[in-house]
Image (cartoon, rainbow, N blue to C red; front, side, top):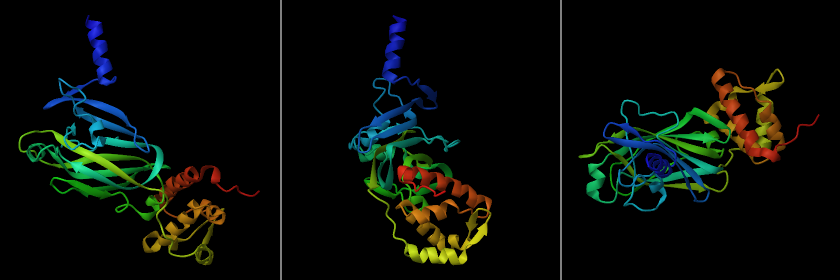
Amino acid sequence: MEKLFMSLIIMLLGFYVPFAMADGVYKEEKVVIKSEPWIEADSARTLVDGSNINRYSIRNLFDNDKTTAWVTKFDKESPYLDGGLFKLTFKAPVFVKSIIIINGYQKTERLYYTNQRVKTLNIEKVLIGGRSLPLENTVTLKDGMGAQAISLRSGWTQSINLFKTKALIFNVLDIYAGSKYQDLCISGITVNYAENIEYSPSVSWKELQEVIDKNSVKKGNGWDWEGLTLNDYKYFNDLLYYVLVGNKDAYLLFSAYTPEGVAQSEAMTLYKKAVEESLGDRRPIREQ
Protein backbone atom coordinates (compact mmCIF):
# COMPACT_ATOMS: atom_id res chain seq x y z
CA MET A 1 0.00 0.00 0.00
CA GLU A 2 2.86 2.36 0.88
CA LYS A 3 4.60 1.69 -2.48
CA LEU A 4 1.35 2.35 -4.35
CA PHE A 5 0.89 5.63 -2.48
CA MET A 6 4.45 6.77 -3.34
CA SER A 7 3.95 5.81 -7.01
CA LEU A 8 0.82 7.94 -7.17
CA ILE A 9 2.67 10.87 -5.59
CA ILE A 10 5.49 10.61 -8.14
CA MET A 11 3.02 10.47 -11.03
CA LEU A 12 1.15 13.51 -9.78
CA LEU A 13 4.31 15.54 -9.26
CA GLY A 14 5.69 14.75 -12.69
CA PHE A 15 8.82 13.23 -11.14
CA TYR A 16 9.59 16.46 -9.24
CA VAL A 17 10.08 16.16 -5.49
CA PRO A 18 8.59 19.04 -3.47
CA PHE A 19 10.87 20.94 -1.11
CA ALA A 20 10.04 23.06 1.91
CA MET A 21 10.91 26.71 2.34
CA ALA A 22 9.71 29.24 4.88
CA ASP A 23 5.96 29.81 4.46
CA GLY A 24 5.31 26.90 2.11
CA VAL A 25 6.18 23.79 0.09
CA TYR A 26 7.45 24.23 -3.48
CA LYS A 27 8.43 22.14 -6.48
CA GLU A 28 10.42 22.58 -9.66
CA GLU A 29 8.37 22.49 -12.86
CA LYS A 30 8.89 21.91 -16.56
CA VAL A 31 5.84 22.15 -18.82
CA VAL A 32 5.34 22.43 -22.58
CA ILE A 33 3.02 25.13 -23.88
CA LYS A 34 1.65 24.15 -27.29
CA SER A 35 1.59 27.67 -28.67
CA GLU A 36 3.18 28.76 -31.95
CA PRO A 37 6.07 28.23 -31.53
CA TRP A 38 5.96 25.71 -28.70
CA ILE A 39 7.43 27.02 -25.46
CA GLU A 40 9.01 25.00 -22.67
CA ALA A 41 8.39 26.84 -19.40
CA ASP A 42 10.62 26.06 -16.42
CA SER A 43 9.98 27.15 -12.86
CA ALA A 44 12.60 26.91 -10.11
CA ARG A 45 9.92 27.28 -7.42
CA THR A 46 6.17 26.71 -7.76
CA LEU A 47 3.95 26.72 -4.69
CA VAL A 48 2.35 23.33 -3.98
CA ASP A 49 -1.25 23.39 -2.77
CA GLY A 50 -2.04 20.35 -0.65
CA SER A 51 -5.36 19.58 -2.30
CA ASN A 52 -4.27 20.39 -5.90
CA ILE A 53 -0.52 20.37 -6.55
CA ASN A 54 -0.95 21.97 -9.98
CA ARG A 55 -3.22 24.79 -8.81
CA TYR A 56 -0.43 27.38 -9.00
CA SER A 57 1.47 25.88 -11.95
CA ILE A 58 3.61 27.98 -14.28
CA ARG A 59 1.22 26.75 -16.98
CA ASN A 60 -1.21 29.36 -15.62
CA LEU A 61 0.91 32.08 -17.23
CA PHE A 62 -0.34 30.95 -20.65
CA ASP A 63 -4.02 30.11 -20.06
CA ASN A 64 -5.38 33.62 -20.87
CA ASP A 65 -7.21 33.60 -17.57
CA LYS A 66 -6.57 36.39 -15.05
CA THR A 67 -8.34 34.42 -12.33
CA THR A 68 -5.41 31.96 -12.20
CA ALA A 69 -1.77 32.70 -11.40
CA TRP A 70 1.67 31.17 -11.20
CA VAL A 71 2.63 31.40 -7.53
CA THR A 72 6.25 31.26 -6.45
CA LYS A 73 8.58 32.36 -3.66
CA PHE A 74 10.77 35.49 -3.69
CA ASP A 75 14.02 34.89 -1.81
CA LYS A 76 15.37 38.34 -0.96
CA GLU A 77 18.62 36.82 0.34
CA SER A 78 19.36 35.12 -3.02
CA PRO A 79 17.13 36.71 -5.66
CA TYR A 80 19.35 35.82 -8.64
CA LEU A 81 19.37 32.22 -9.87
CA ASP A 82 21.74 31.21 -12.66
CA GLY A 83 19.00 29.29 -14.45
CA GLY A 84 16.38 31.92 -13.60
CA LEU A 85 13.39 31.92 -11.28
CA PHE A 86 11.59 31.01 -14.48
CA LYS A 87 12.71 30.40 -18.04
CA LEU A 88 11.01 30.23 -21.43
CA THR A 89 12.72 28.10 -24.08
CA PHE A 90 11.43 28.24 -27.66
CA LYS A 91 11.18 25.05 -29.70
CA ALA A 92 12.71 26.96 -32.62
CA PRO A 93 14.73 30.21 -32.27
CA VAL A 94 12.65 33.36 -32.78
CA PHE A 95 12.93 37.12 -33.21
CA VAL A 96 11.37 38.41 -29.99
CA LYS A 97 9.78 41.86 -29.88
CA SER A 98 8.11 42.20 -26.49
CA ILE A 99 6.23 40.48 -23.73
CA ILE A 100 2.92 41.41 -22.16
CA ILE A 101 2.90 40.65 -18.44
CA ILE A 102 -0.11 40.54 -16.13
CA ASN A 103 1.54 41.12 -12.78
CA GLY A 104 0.26 39.85 -9.44
CA TYR A 105 -2.84 37.77 -8.74
CA GLN A 106 -5.47 39.66 -10.74
CA LYS A 107 -8.49 37.49 -9.92
CA THR A 108 -9.65 40.37 -7.72
CA GLU A 109 -8.18 43.70 -6.63
CA ARG A 110 -8.07 42.41 -3.06
CA LEU A 111 -5.99 39.36 -4.05
CA TYR A 112 -3.74 41.60 -6.14
CA TYR A 113 -2.71 43.74 -3.18
CA THR A 114 -2.72 41.06 -0.48
CA ASN A 115 -0.14 39.01 -2.45
CA GLN A 116 3.34 40.03 -3.62
CA ARG A 117 3.90 41.47 -7.12
CA VAL A 118 7.03 41.77 -9.26
CA LYS A 119 8.77 45.14 -8.99
CA THR A 120 12.17 44.67 -10.64
CA LEU A 121 12.56 42.03 -13.34
CA ASN A 122 15.87 40.97 -14.87
CA ILE A 123 15.62 39.46 -18.37
CA GLU A 124 18.43 37.65 -20.17
CA LYS A 125 18.35 36.63 -23.81
CA VAL A 126 19.96 33.34 -24.72
CA LEU A 127 20.98 33.97 -28.31
CA ILE A 128 21.15 31.50 -31.15
CA GLY A 129 24.94 31.50 -30.65
CA GLY A 130 24.88 30.78 -26.93
CA ARG A 131 24.48 32.40 -23.55
CA SER A 132 26.35 35.50 -22.46
CA LEU A 133 25.51 37.11 -19.12
CA PRO A 134 26.15 40.76 -20.13
CA LEU A 135 23.28 40.48 -22.62
CA GLU A 136 20.57 41.22 -20.10
CA ASN A 137 18.17 43.99 -19.20
CA THR A 138 16.42 45.08 -16.02
CA VAL A 139 12.98 46.71 -15.97
CA THR A 140 10.77 48.13 -13.23
CA LEU A 141 7.10 47.25 -13.43
CA LYS A 142 4.33 49.61 -12.34
CA ASP A 143 2.26 48.49 -9.40
CA GLY A 144 -1.29 48.31 -10.69
CA MET A 145 -3.95 46.08 -12.19
CA GLY A 146 -3.98 45.41 -15.93
CA ALA A 147 -1.38 44.33 -18.50
CA GLN A 148 2.07 45.90 -19.01
CA ALA A 149 4.24 45.73 -22.12
CA ILE A 150 7.99 45.12 -21.84
CA SER A 151 10.16 45.68 -24.90
CA LEU A 152 12.60 42.88 -25.68
CA ARG A 153 14.47 45.16 -28.06
CA SER A 154 15.18 48.34 -26.09
CA GLY A 155 17.90 47.85 -23.49
CA TRP A 156 19.92 45.53 -25.73
CA THR A 157 22.32 46.60 -28.47
CA GLN A 158 21.23 46.51 -32.11
CA SER A 159 23.77 43.76 -32.73
CA ILE A 160 22.02 41.56 -30.14
CA ASN A 161 18.60 42.27 -31.66
CA LEU A 162 19.79 41.13 -35.09
CA PHE A 163 19.93 37.54 -33.84
CA LYS A 164 17.17 35.09 -33.03
CA THR A 165 16.61 34.14 -29.40
CA LYS A 166 16.58 30.58 -28.09
CA ALA A 167 15.37 31.32 -24.59
CA LEU A 168 14.51 34.05 -22.10
CA ILE A 169 15.71 33.79 -18.50
CA PHE A 170 13.82 35.78 -15.86
CA ASN A 171 14.92 36.70 -12.35
CA VAL A 172 12.89 38.79 -9.91
CA LEU A 173 15.24 41.17 -8.08
CA ASP A 174 12.67 43.08 -6.03
CA ILE A 175 8.97 42.90 -5.20
CA TYR A 176 5.99 44.97 -4.11
CA ALA A 177 5.06 43.56 -0.70
CA GLY A 178 1.70 41.89 -0.15
CA SER A 179 -0.45 43.28 2.65
CA LYS A 180 -1.24 39.77 3.92
CA TYR A 181 0.54 36.94 2.06
CA GLN A 182 4.19 36.13 1.29
CA ASP A 183 3.41 34.58 -2.09
CA LEU A 184 4.77 36.13 -5.32
CA CYS A 185 2.22 35.93 -8.14
CA ILE A 186 2.08 36.52 -11.90
CA SER A 187 -1.23 36.01 -13.71
CA GLY A 188 -0.07 35.88 -17.32
CA ILE A 189 2.61 36.36 -19.98
CA THR A 190 2.32 36.72 -23.76
CA VAL A 191 5.37 36.74 -26.04
CA ASN A 192 5.23 38.83 -29.23
CA TYR A 193 7.42 37.92 -32.19
CA ALA A 194 8.76 39.46 -35.41
CA GLU A 195 8.89 37.45 -38.63
CA ASN A 196 12.22 38.85 -39.84
CA ILE A 197 15.15 41.03 -38.87
CA GLU A 198 13.91 44.51 -38.04
CA TYR A 199 16.88 46.71 -38.91
CA SER A 200 17.62 49.44 -41.44
CA PRO A 201 21.34 49.80 -42.28
CA SER A 202 22.75 53.32 -42.16
CA VAL A 203 24.66 52.90 -45.45
CA SER A 204 24.52 50.66 -48.51
CA TRP A 205 26.83 47.65 -48.73
CA LYS A 206 28.95 49.39 -51.37
CA GLU A 207 29.37 52.46 -49.17
CA LEU A 208 30.19 50.36 -46.11
CA GLN A 209 32.74 48.32 -48.03
CA GLU A 210 34.47 51.48 -49.23
CA VAL A 211 34.64 52.90 -45.70
CA ILE A 212 36.01 49.65 -44.29
CA ASP A 213 38.60 49.29 -47.08
CA LYS A 214 39.79 52.83 -46.43
CA ASN A 215 40.10 52.48 -42.64
CA SER A 216 40.94 48.83 -41.95
CA VAL A 217 44.32 47.76 -40.58
CA LYS A 218 45.86 44.40 -41.42
CA LYS A 219 46.20 42.11 -38.40
CA GLY A 220 47.82 38.76 -39.09
CA ASN A 221 45.44 36.87 -41.36
CA GLY A 222 42.61 39.21 -40.41
CA TRP A 223 41.89 42.90 -40.01
CA ASP A 224 40.78 45.41 -37.39
CA TRP A 225 39.28 48.90 -37.43
CA GLU A 226 38.35 50.64 -34.19
CA GLY A 227 36.05 52.97 -36.14
CA LEU A 228 33.72 50.02 -36.64
CA THR A 229 32.62 50.44 -33.01
CA LEU A 230 32.09 54.22 -33.06
CA ASN A 231 28.67 55.89 -33.04
CA ASP A 232 27.08 53.13 -30.98
CA TYR A 233 28.57 50.40 -33.20
CA LYS A 234 26.66 51.70 -36.22
CA TYR A 235 29.00 50.31 -38.89
CA PHE A 236 29.52 47.03 -37.03
CA ASN A 237 25.75 46.52 -36.89
CA ASP A 238 25.52 47.34 -40.60
CA LEU A 239 28.20 44.75 -41.39
CA LEU A 240 26.42 42.17 -39.24
CA TYR A 241 23.12 42.89 -40.98
CA TYR A 242 24.59 42.35 -44.46
CA VAL A 243 26.16 39.09 -43.26
CA LEU A 244 22.85 37.78 -41.92
CA VAL A 245 20.88 38.61 -45.07
CA GLY A 246 23.32 36.50 -47.11
CA ASN A 247 25.91 38.89 -48.54
CA LYS A 248 28.91 36.67 -49.33
CA ASP A 249 31.49 39.47 -49.33
CA ALA A 250 30.21 40.74 -46.00
CA TYR A 251 30.44 37.22 -44.54
CA LEU A 252 34.06 36.76 -45.66
CA LEU A 253 35.00 40.17 -44.31
CA PHE A 254 33.24 39.55 -41.01
CA SER A 255 34.83 36.11 -40.62
CA ALA A 256 38.30 37.68 -40.79
CA TYR A 257 37.49 40.53 -38.38
CA THR A 258 39.72 40.28 -35.26
CA PRO A 259 39.15 43.26 -32.95
CA GLU A 260 41.64 44.50 -30.38
CA GLY A 261 40.78 44.15 -26.70
CA VAL A 262 39.73 41.19 -24.58
CA ALA A 263 36.10 42.27 -24.12
CA GLN A 264 35.53 42.83 -27.84
CA SER A 265 37.23 39.56 -28.72
CA GLU A 266 35.01 37.64 -26.28
CA ALA A 267 31.91 39.28 -27.76
CA MET A 268 33.08 38.39 -31.28
CA THR A 269 33.33 34.73 -30.29
CA LEU A 270 29.62 34.82 -29.44
CA TYR A 271 28.72 36.80 -32.57
CA LYS A 272 30.64 34.46 -34.87
CA LYS A 273 28.97 31.40 -33.34
CA ALA A 274 25.60 33.14 -33.73
CA VAL A 275 26.33 33.97 -37.37
CA GLU A 276 27.35 30.39 -38.17
CA GLU A 277 24.22 28.98 -36.56
CA SER A 278 21.97 31.65 -38.10
CA LEU A 279 23.19 31.03 -41.64
CA GLY A 280 23.41 27.25 -41.38
CA ASP A 281 23.39 25.79 -44.90
CA ARG A 282 23.29 29.32 -46.34
CA ARG A 283 26.81 29.97 -45.09
CA PRO A 284 29.06 30.98 -48.03
CA ILE A 285 31.86 28.58 -48.94
CA ARG A 286 35.38 29.97 -48.82
CA GLU A 287 37.19 29.64 -52.11
CA GLN A 288 40.48 27.76 -51.93
